[in-house]
Length: 110
Image 1: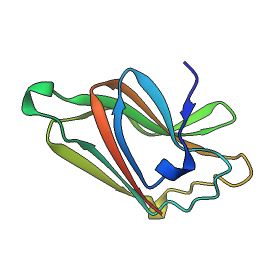
Image 2: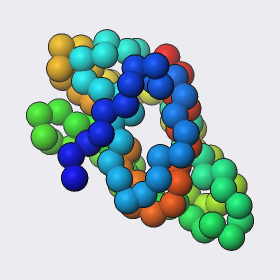
Image 3: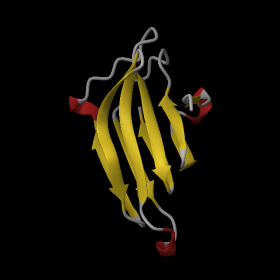
């Protein structure tokens, strides 16, 4: 399945990225400076863990930040991008979330 670009209006805060799907959360060429990203599994305890990949895609090549990561229900993961070099200027890098199981809420700080 090809990545599904999301409108720029949803760049700051995305809700309910539901598996099994691939979401381009920061499309290439948006010229956004990403400071941090917060991933949460804020679902009911009975919903179970979410399983997902987070990666930078450049020309079809995937550079994984997280691969097959399991996020327990009611928990969150904060990633500071100060040491992750992400170039999404002029159709370079895209930040992609591939949800395999569950629902992942995403908040991006720019």
